[in-house]
Image (cartoon, rainbow, N blue to C red; front, side, top):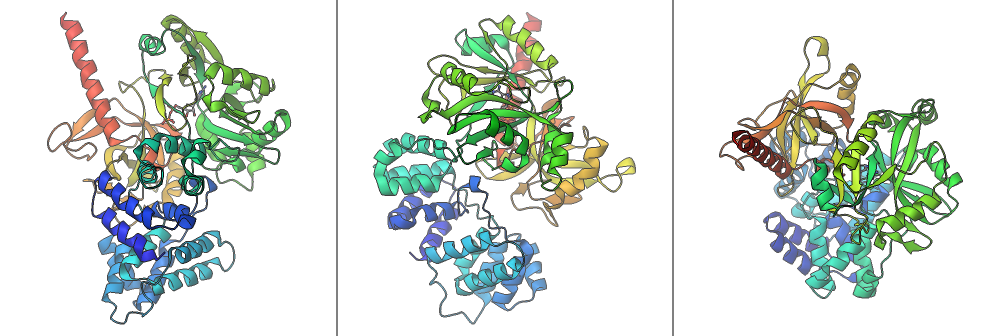
Length: 594
Ligand code: ATP
């Protein structure tokens, strides 16, 4: 199939924001796609080559693409850079430069999907000496054959920024309509996706085995399962009511969620965002390998730093020090030992446990887990009145936890992969501030520090994620809560995201001293959400001309490296928090008046 066929669809998708229209363009594309390359077309449309959990990224640096574009279009790198600064998108630069080029190659427009995929995949696997030259050669070859509009998307793809906004759910709708016999097959496809985290695999399974194969698609060791997520409430009575009077309350450990896949050959760990994080925890890997006899097991738990001499739980952020320390990891393991608290079982005994009720999963998990100081089942108590919950909460906080996870133990307590629902509720201890919960925000800019903070950043410009527009909108400038250690490492942490202009997907009325591509996510608490004329989060949704801001924001010390910027608190959630705050306030007034 010609790559131009895909590009035709991309251009149509870009020209609309209506999900139904996007779906119908994709349905046409899928119907034109030979089944043998269906998975490739699905990956490419989402700007990928493989499922995220394999961690295979194209990894072409912007700088290298400047060189490629200069070469292909006969311009100087300086000229390419200047145009880029003006347009802010290298894809558009490629398109414009090729449009301008009078002498077009006769081959342009003959690229096939198979060829594009193969070359990108080769580039993605290039590493080590000579890889830069080789990437340059491959990219020059590709763009040398591309039409201007193909070049636009190939360039964006190479940068890892295709970002057409085709959500996973839109792909599932498309597959249901085009190959699944209609919308009715959508829940089955979604179930298959939640259990495999791989849309290409779902598409391939559907293309080769039809909906029957999708129906029988099972959880497999080695393929991460999309995690079940919790709703939140801050009132024990309301929680009890949601749980129909009985629930399992568990310590909510303040650590890193790990989904462990244990096979006869290896033990692999996936993070909440399904990244392979096995390398960070060789100690837990050894523990599970040596202590769990059963093989073919998938379980979930929380890794928490501990003081081994006292058994005391330590702050979560210590874990992040393990990241990127491949070489002195042994030393770090000694300095920052980690305990593992399994809390759920998803697969064992050749059986998909996600369909079983929680008490049954928990019982089997208990049998599988050895009693050992470094690996211990999450502490649990069956509760049936709010007072019991509050007492247990106090105990959890005293033991260094964030609060409780309240879980249903009723008939509805199956593991709902990929879904956020009321069968899990997080009950966090109230922060001292009035905001009921923390928010996770992306750093999009920074202000130079003064005085004691000279030479580093004094404050960060933070943004929430606008899911419907795929944009980041600012919500506060935060300079408090950072320790001296944080301050000294911030420039280094943010260096890879730093750019010399406002990133096109960032919406800001404020001009910071440095701009970043959204990448680093931080947990923030504040006093309240207020209306703001200078922040763009939730602009016009409460009042015309006003956005929303977090007042008195403070960094909690938690870098949310387990979250992608798109996992940040959404602008809709901030609007919701503002409304909930208003409601609480008016209820308080009514009570006081009464
Ligand atoms: P989200 O709800 O989107 O995951 P979040 O990561 O900010 O947002 P948290 O407030 O941290 O959510 O609460 C959910 C997390 O709590 C889980 O993802 C898991 O990592 C952690 N956790 C700790 N203890 C438990 C437990 N006993 N059972 C389930 N999850 C637990």
